[in-house]
Length: 433
Image (cartoon, rainbow, N blue to C red):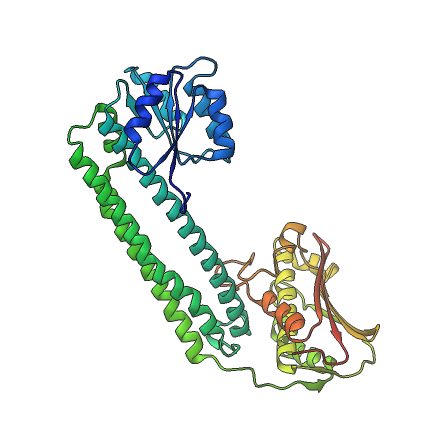
């Protein structure tokens, strides 16, 4: 819409007298009227003038109004401009055809000045409201996307294990940053409600001014059921407000209960962490009635200590080893005990110093991961495990610890049916924040 200039109405009719009558009818409303005598010139004008509404004659030489409308609606740049057809035809089929092509209304000849003005005002107002609401929705969507991203990052910093009950740690102030866009959304919901109420009042006034609608309008009223919309939309807005309130509560809880990560970096021998993690997982590695014991193959080279957050690094090891065990268990489905004794389950773990970086490899000979899933494994809450078997946060948290906290790298290599290997690369010298 042209907020700083008069609204522009394009009049399209091959009869000069009709154009004059229409221009006189619209005179004094504060609108600027443009004129075109045929469909081709109308399309040309619309391309560079972008009127706010078009009054379009149906019967014209060359391309008629229907074809003109079809071309305008097929163009992304002009498809949203409301079109009101002008016709002397009373055939319902022609009216339906025009509406199906995207027209918003009809006025019939000979023109009733009051009707033309009323319908033009109505559809200009509806178009303005629609445009405003679309802008609000787009803005709110962007804010919500930003809030979701911040919430996911906060979640990854909070949840340092697969157990949500252990919450973990949160960077100080993140809750406040999340709360700002939530408050912005909450404040603007009030205006969305006001715009909807304005639209309802406009419709009600329109019904009052035109108490005897024609059959076409009666059909539309029956189809969309305005009383239901008027009753349901406030409830929808109320539900949105409840959702925002819930987000505000979550944000407040995060800021209230979060504590900064006070653990300092220490010089650490990662092989000690790998060994201790495997010891803690010993009960899952042992043989049972379903399968033989999972073999652990170690290949540790002599490596220097690294400056790291030892507890968080051990958690990464725990996540990767646990995932490897899960993958092996999945791969064992349908296999006999004897078959597994012939081709035993294995987890390999190795360390080496390469280009002044410590490289840690943790692999298995399990089910493997196909490429489409492998591309998503570091996305928060993505999981292929059954409900109750995992939150989908283990790998995203591990990636954040390695790449965010330690400025290292976590990679995944896999082949379906052969196994998966995760490779951790850590700088020897501390590069963490």
